[in-house]
Length: 496
Picture 1 (tube, rainbow, N blue to C red):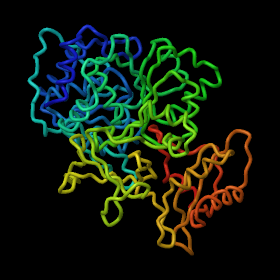
Picture 2 (picture 1 turned 30 degrees about the horizontal axis):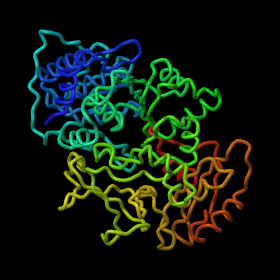
Picture 3 (picture 1 turned 60 degrees about the horizontal axis):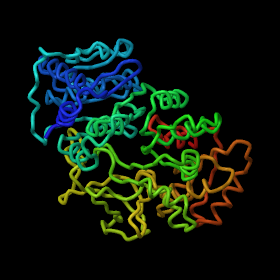
Picture 4 (picture 1 turned 90 degrees about the vertical axis):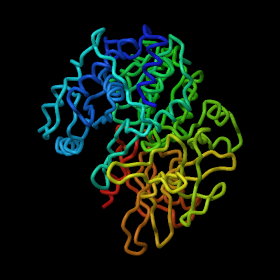
């Protein structure tokens, strides 16, 4: 079992169909396979241990992803937003490696020994004389290595084996299910698991992938209209900007081909997705929750779930817009307390998952799966009576006030329910009396005015007094990373 099988099946079944486009350049599935064969020959000929990519979205990304699979070499896409020193440190950890990049990126680096650069814009096209590689069939071989953000120390190298990724794709995608007219717009970066899984799942379904090198709402809308995009994946911050652009231009009718939007990678405020459903009523929205260590999605809030929630007057059903849905049929999920006891409906705890797609492994430290194959996601959350999962944040984000654990999520949700609040994040702040206390950074809606005291009273009336923010900081906007996750460490630093 090898990722290259996905491309082989697509190229054999519909080799003349467009596979991937970026700007004016397009490769058919047959051409993409030839290019991947040529990349594999380059990797094998150089004796490399890794195939690294340092680039924005472009044709080099899928060619290197599949070429590394044919060659039996782990694919390591790197975050081009890191500093020069951080990138050099990561490269030194994967040598000997072939680094697919562009001259402007290469100019930033003092390449460590064992790193051989290759121009991503000049990758060989492959042809009839390109040797056809025999892809290794070891399902336990490493397919992808992704470095974590390293916010609390040196970045860890998450390892995904071929059997993990293939378990996810084969369990969630029907081969050849996409029509020839279907086009998926991919704007998430290639170094994120969401970007990788978007390429793999579209390939297996036979969908035409359109790559956007860097996200801009106006450009996204232009491409979606001009190229009649039918499917897209977005992080919450991207969707917010697209909604704002559509509302400003009253241009929803310019996306007649758009059928489906999947979103994930960060918390989606219920008010935002409600606006999106109203603005694009014919589009199927799906909330996809997953992690790098689980080869992408483990829970889905389906289009039917979205429509039922927005149409319902029942609070429990309406609230599902704020959930991440229910586990995939191929995934088991539990919420456990501090003692390890499996918790019942409505009880918050730590989320554990198990299944073939769950890797839970890091290079150098090995597998973090327990004896029964369960992986602790380090996300806190709870399940409702119907099995819908609600996330409350990372375990590290829990505020310990006088020995009492406080989840930021419930306070954030309460603040967001206030009519004046557009966005909010809650973090732990130092407290002489309690050790830690609640601090809230708040963004107000345009034209709205409210005092810290009013918001504190709002929370006090709806939650226990221990949940009331000791300090409220008003900001013009919250700090988010490119995947739509709020940078709590930045907010904590501001409070400090």
